[in-house]
Length: 226
Length: 114
Image (cartoon, rainbow over all chains, first blue to last red; front, side):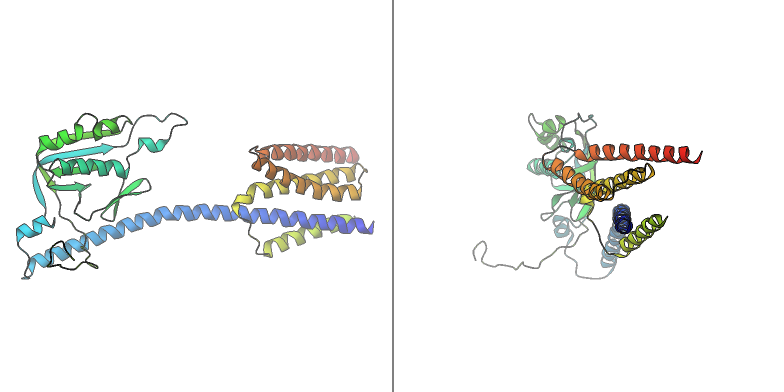
């Protein structure tokens, strides 16, 4: 009888311990979920901060324009994509597929990827585009178009679908560069991704607002030789 | 009567110690711990029922408790290894037994009282 008591006590002890450990683990999981929700808030905060930064950069530009400064002449600034430009061109709207996804199919095939945008931009450049912007983010020589989860990054800014690619150049040539048989629009259409191309008499493309980095760069008087 | 005091004190001690120890089980083991807890509950309810029906056997109860818990976890683990989800099977099996035992305990108490 004496052993019995202790045995029951021990079993109860273990049971209590296990139940509480399990309870604590469940609570931990709930907290983790809350932490995941927090990431959403942080993303929103980041976006606000970026907008503020853009506004401040604009202010810098304005102040520079007002000051006397020895600014480079207009045509150089335009070549460096530092001015707002407009001209005839095309606006390309790319939207995610609205096709219902069949079970067992990879939904990745039906969304727009950085590579699709890259190919479109490449075709537009080959078609003689003189200025390009993705969602009003001006493309320059060092601009990246990079996958960042379900969104893409351009000039360090994050954009989600739908994407608008604006290009200044000969509207007909740009249009046919994209829509040629077996071209990019053809292959995207296969996955139900909607690409709408509008030829326009006047497309406005904003200036590049980021900063140039020249950490490793040096002038070289010897041309292409070292 | 004494034995209930031992059971309750043991339970409370277990809860307190479990609460105070900084033991954190990663969420990936959640399946195993929940099966273990359910197996332990099943053993305890089974023991209570046996006690009420006056067929309680201590060594049977103790071995049943530990082997239930360990075997349940091992079985679920082996199931995971070979791609059979025995987790739900264990949950349903032990869960059913807990309810059956509860019903038997209730019946037993009712017939004794009235």
